[in-house]
Length: 117
Image (cartoon, rainbow, N blue to C red; front, side, top):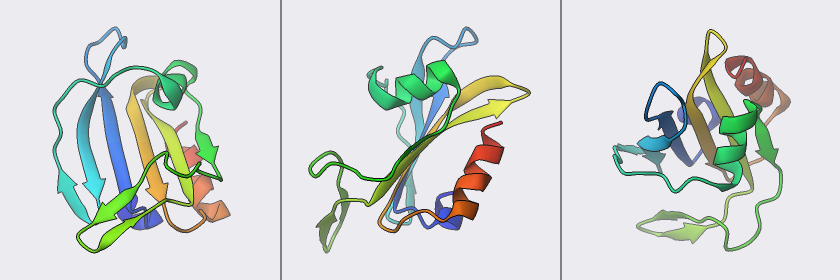
C-alpha cells in the first residue's frame, strides 16, 4: 500500500487480542525500507479513533513538528496523513497509518476507502 500510494512512511498497527482492546505496532515502512517493530502502542489519538469508529481519517494538512520523515540526507514534514481501518469480514484487524509528501489523489482515497470496507 505504501509503495502504491507513494507514501514515505507507514505503520501497521494490529490488534493484540481477539477482544480488540489493544493495538501493537506490527511493522513499519520507512523511506522505502521495511522495519519490524514489536512493541506496545500507547493508545490514544487518531489511531485509537480509527480503531473505535472503523472509519478512514484523511488529514490534508499536517501541523509542523507533528511528525517528520527522516533519511540519511535530512528530514521533512509530510503534506498529508491517512489512517485507515484494516477490516476482514467487517471485523477490525488493525489500523494502517501513512504519511506522504504529495497530496493523495482521489483514486488513492477511493482505494483506501474500499480496503477499509
